Image 1 (tube, helix red, strand yellow):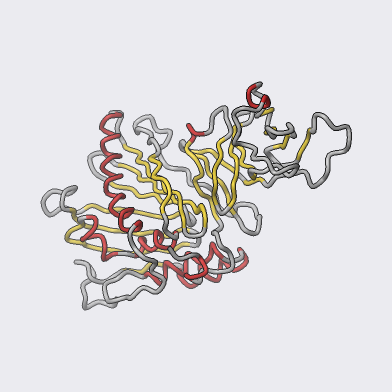
Image 2: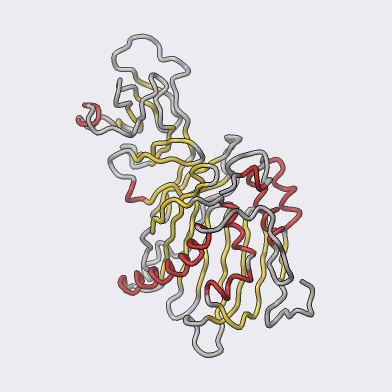
Length: 352
């Protein structure tokens, strides 16, 4: 799969934004070792319950802070110490908030200023752990979405489907937001009434009204509101007898490789029914997943009339691969709404 430079996205290899890095059940009493944005990291829960993310290797002698089960530091349950994590090799302790070493138990000498590990801003919300990645090391300029109805007792909370690694550049996934033409052959849409994209700064939205081969009976239509908050968090609402909220997340692991998750929140107290809906939603998403896993990179799409505004989506996406000072430049080029032709409400005679 092609890398970021092939797509001409910008100065940075990995985008700026909030990304999923774990499901909450993965972060318990032991450090969780992960790799994202080309860096090995350790995610752990401090004594207060707060979650931290730090770079994986101790600056003392290069030991992995998370991958150990035999050291007495681990066996004596000293691995997580307060809000810090101890190296299993020499027991140096690093504070999760700022990454600084605050204890070398065997040495009376002052702690070297260089004795620190990289940290990332982390939030825990809606059964998941979210990490802020910024190549410029800036503070977040937007928040993790609130995930409407997560705490509503009338809705069944999702369980995260971990779909693993996909050898695919995230640009190919983002392209889906503009891809009107795949909805009928891949997903079974029918009698498409309208398709539009809306761009509003760091949010990209897709609005679709259409029938479906199996989900809609007769000549009825349903409206799907699907949007990205930043480059890695997608939500989609579906109305009907049991309204639902789809969550799809992808996070860069290395350049051209992503980790993917799926989940579904359903308005019902019937857990079995909700899990059935989630399985159906996952099956629909798997239709895209299979395509992405078996295609070559689409660096220069061959556009025809009726394709969606791929060029606009790609311009929108560039804001996350360039210095934050340039974000408004890319936003100004796309902000607004684009109606795509080739639907019942916007036939071919209309402007494409």
